[in-house]
Length: 105
Image 1 (cartoon, rainbow, N blue to C red):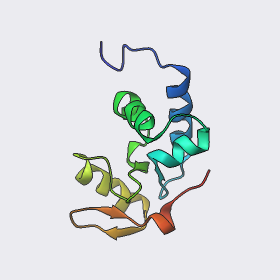
Image 2: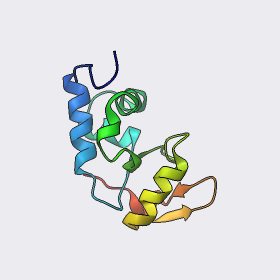
Image 3: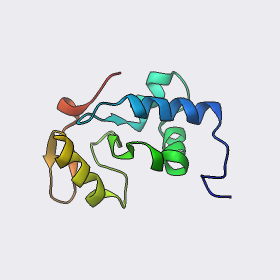
């Protein structure tokens, strides 16, 4: 059963709602989202994003070190450049400037 066929549980829905709130040019780490929700952890948020994240601005959810989801660096970089997301490096490894780009909700 694919993500499109799988029902979205309450936690996943809450994660996706937070991602929808992140403004263009800003990011949150997986752990930031879990902390904001007061539930789960980075791995749980990562699982939600891997399963259901294709319909939201997935590139705005990154690792705490500022790197985008593995395997999606070039697609994420295009979004970062388009949105004016502060970067530490636009060359591999792509890295967002977490100090300037982090959104605290």
